[in-house]
Length: 155
Image (cartoon, rainbow, N blue to C red; front, side):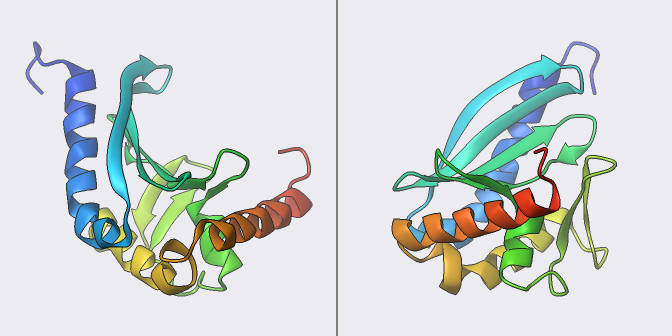
């Protein structure tokens, strides 16, 4: 990085690159990407945004120090991370995009590009989750949230 480059701008550019790669998968389902913000926090520069459709959001964050962060599916009442959604659908063994909660880093289980891993996982979620209506998506989020609360009641 050039010493004069704005690290927030770099994070935003990286996030927008991720969104462009996801648009061919999420766009046909009615989701559109909205960039939200960029800033510098204790973890360094970051940018975040959402794919949105009918009150449902798929949250993305790019941290300059660690790359793509966890993906969060939310509707204003429930927010559930990618690992828990995959578990809700009993897809954990097929899941390629992993968020390691201990290190707060993401990786691809099979060593492929992380964005390709996200796309692979999203394709597994389309029929039963992402392409359904708001009512079903809310039921899925609520169910995954309840499972998480049982495992970790303090969260």
